[in-house]
Length: 415
Image: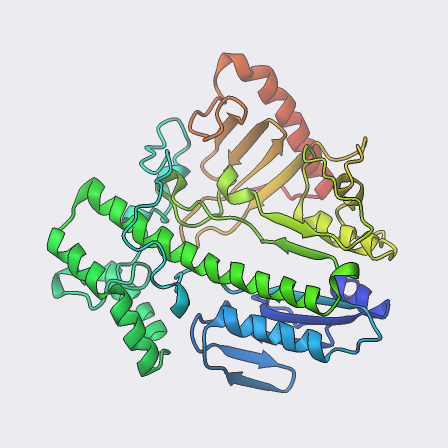
């Protein structure tokens, strides 16, 4: 079987559904199984983004979140109303460099947002990997590209900032003169105030956090409005009665926890993902939240909810019964995680591990270092218990389960 013959859109299309994908694709594979697609090259741009469709590549004027929403609404309006549909609305935000839309640029002005308890984490009990990453807000963000300090002074332009400045100029120069005027006015006073204060050390790190998290949440605010528009449209068109809506993400970000802005590590802020579901009428609305639900369970769940058969080759299991608060006796009690991408951006070391409802075991295998966390006693994951005498049986049990999962999944031994 060819690699994409049995993917989710192909299966739905074969079952008579109209299928569409709008927004971020960010895969090398060609889209298969979609009647319509309008995708962003790579991760796309926040302002005046380019799009790829079947027969053309072109640029649209405006803010990417708003444009994607309009495209989705237009597709739903113009679909063949005699057939059911499957639509993916894949937002570009809130990927780096967190450029808010024009209407959100002044949100959170003149207020300080809460700082995570672990923002100044010293990684004291953990493997060296936690110290060697390159995604600390205080040390690895770019003043211009990430934090919107512009223009930079000569003293601020070092080798690190040269890279950021080139990236910022590329993004900023996509803006029209009117958009640039709006941006310049939104950040001008705060940027002047920052330079007047000449912050250093802890105060500088906290300023960077506030600028970063506010821009991040401003991007999220636009997504919230977008989702609201889509839901309101489904209500208005009478589609809510038989349409299942799922809001999810591919992963989460640290958002300042442990001092970081990205993801990749197997720690909780990164590996958990949001999952909100709006049910059509007639579906029982209860949830058993004790089960570990994975990304690979989404496709089987959609197929079962649509009354379609599950292919034998598909990983994951339907969690329809969990959504209706039914106890599933044979549900997974652990899951496997593996991060391969090193050396690469942010310099997070290769690692794999296992998570259960309470514990987590992580192996950084090229530096051969282990971490174990009791999520009930240490929800912030700052105390590595791998060598603690009270956790030796837990460690042994987790190691056995980890090896079982690696064998089951056919993971190749590391060099």
